[in-house]
Length: 75
Image 1: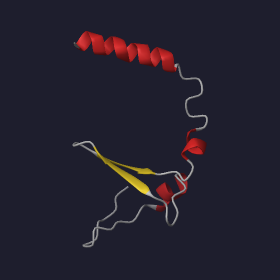
Image 2: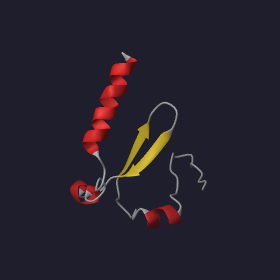
Image 3: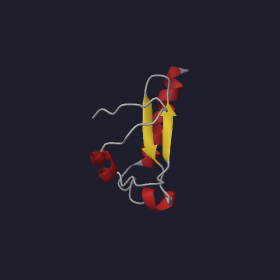
């Protein structure tokens, strides 16, 4: 999907995206610039409620141990 930026720096969020992510008037958006890409995320009014169930079934300890092992190999 493509949108155009106006001379005032404004753009429209496509309706499909607004519906999918429940973006309505006064929804705050977080802009993340990693130097290569810009990511736009809607900021939830209730971050705890938004995260509920997101990590169910994820082996967090295993992921942490794997990341630490990769860090040791890089050093």
